[in-house]
Amino acid sequence: MSQKNRIAFIFLDEIHHLYHFISVAVELSKTNSVHILTYPGNHTFLHKTLQRLGGEKVRIDKLKTQPIRAFTDNLKNRRFPRKGFWLKKNMDYIQNFDAVIVTDYIHRYILDARKEKSKLKIIKFPHGTPGRGYWHNEKLKDFDAQLVLGDFQFQQLKELGLLGNHPMKVGYAKLDVVNTEKNLTLFKNEKPVVLYNPHFDPIFSSWQDMGLKILDFFYNQNQFNLIFAPHLHLFDTLKGGENKTSIPKIYFKCESIFMDLGSEKSINMAYINKADIYLGDVSSQVYEFIIHPRPVIFINSKNVDYKDDIDYRFWRCGVVVTTIEKLKNALENAETDFKKYEAVQKKITLENYYSETDSTASERAANAINSFLKTK
Image (cartoon, rainbow, N blue to C red; front, side, top):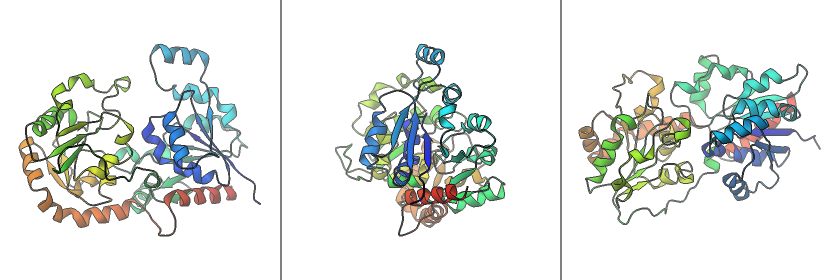
């Protein structure tokens, strides 16, 4: 029997990172010693997800940060430790693993501390489908290996010289974990459901320019229901986000509007499965929506010249509007316009997510990591 590897997943982020690696951790735990390294706390969502996936072999190590940093984090009401200080405090322990897997660019601390003869390998997981330009980051060249979701990401990284020495094209492991229930009851009627999912970054987001106007539009019409489920960071004031008190209370009380400013359902595709029409700006969540092709509308509130920009590839999937008046027209013609975009959506999904009929993305990722570690 081959020797088990000791593999660590570092989890110091919000819950939306979890679904991108948790099923792979469970698969790897079948043949390896797998640890999730995180900070002290209840971690209810983490424990619940592991239990649901049968991940009883995965060990959770709750490691403390430096005492003075814990004290100042508490004073400043931080939910998470500052990653650099946490990593430095626990670096001796981290060095004992054969591989460390991260979903963010916190690897530099590990890379700098890695001893010359250390066998420790650093592996990068994406924490979402490639959307805007942020995902082709020069730091990808630092990793010993990286997981790639599909042909589009692979080809783009290859052209940019960012594939590294060991890319592993495996598919989208999140799809092995998420909520597939389609019977979620949110409204008392059968009107079409629109999902509005604005991004958090004010440089790109439609919220600051048009968000309240969009809520007001849906409040004053009777053709559609609206799920308002923005990116988790949009109303995270600890990360510089908007204050939810800026939203008039009438929208929270409206029977045709369902508001979720950051629960588990906003990340587990429950709303994606429920919605008939997607309304967004630059969030890559739209790629999850079009796995099952449906009408899509994008809000170009910044008047971006996007048509020849690969970083706005998702805007090829539907109608792009710039005003509330054009949004009204796009919604009324959504089903008719969709016929123009259905083939494009299917093509983009095939490019985004590698798949095989006899294995899951999580299984392929675990097998690829095992093979990589066996050769190193």
